[in-house]
Length: 133
Image (cartoon, rainbow, N blue to C red):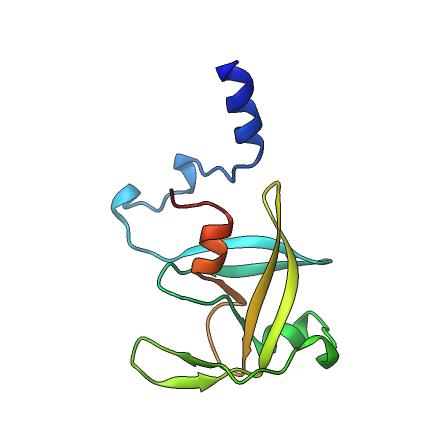
C-alpha cells in the first residue's frame, strides 16, 4: 500500500537532479528559475522567490504573451519591495500554469517594472504547490 501511495504522490512532483546543480553543488545561493507553460505559451526565466508575498507579472510579459488588456482586473494594491519603496499595481490577472505535471490557477499582480524575470512565483504559489511542509 505504501508503494502505491508513493507513486501517486510522485506523479505530482517536479524533480531536480544533481546534474542540474551549478559547480558549487548544494552550497550555491543562485536564484531558482523554471520554465513553465502559461496557458498556450512557454515562459522561461520564471523566478521562484520565497521572500515575495505576491506572484508578479511584469507588464512586458503580458505584451509578449499577447494578453488583452481586458483580462487585467484593476485594483488599488501597492506592492512594496525589500527597500521599503512601493509600486502601484496595474491590476491583477489569473493565469493557468503548468509546471512539470502539475497545473495551477494563480493570481498575479501586474506591475510596470523592468526586471530580469518574466514571471515571479512567490509564497502564494509556493504554498499552493505545497513546496514547503
